[in-house]
Amino acid sequence: MPELPTTAKGAATRRRILDTAAEEFAERGIAGARIDRITTAARTNKAQVYGYFGSKDGLFDAVIADHADRLMSAVAFDADDLPGWAVGMYDENLRHPELVRLMAWLRLERRPAGRLTDTPHDEPKLAAIAAAQAAGRLRQGDPLDLIALVIAMACAWSPASGFYAATADEPATDHDRRRALLRECVARAVTP
Image (tube, rainbow, N blue to C red; front, side):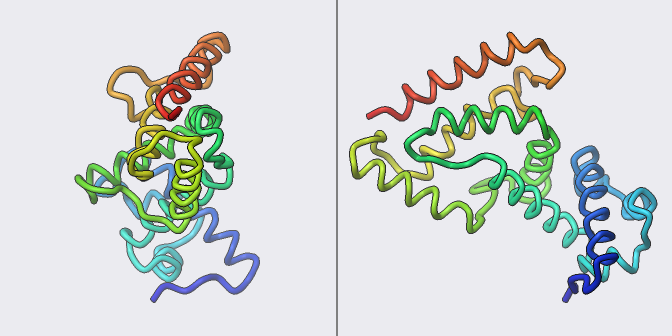
């Protein structure tokens, strides 16, 4: 079983490996990523990668978990403000387009059907949606379906878009226009 670092230097090395691997996996996917490139860029060696993560697949799983944790802490969830949450996700996708790219590779190479992730962060969100539905503040329906719809809308201009991938360097007016449209459409979709 992989081990966690026990020193500050080890923790810093593990962090460098995760950050470097995230870039490698986002760009090339699981199959195309190379441990040699990761170790060179992270200024470490294969023994440390395998010691901390067990395997290339274990490293990918750790990268996904790390980025899911970052996303969940970056965008506060409020079942009573799903439009605001969607806009926050849009902005996070602009700041960190690798997040959506990693999820796309996970879908392509590991989980072609069904639920993409199942994290401990999901259950409180689903419970909050169910409570808001029971109180009449959100439209009825499976909470998982509702959150999937909101996430899909928030990712409409993300790197996973089949139509248009926005970038942070586009004019602010374009982003403001998209945020307003997203906020209005999500509000209409979730209002009872």
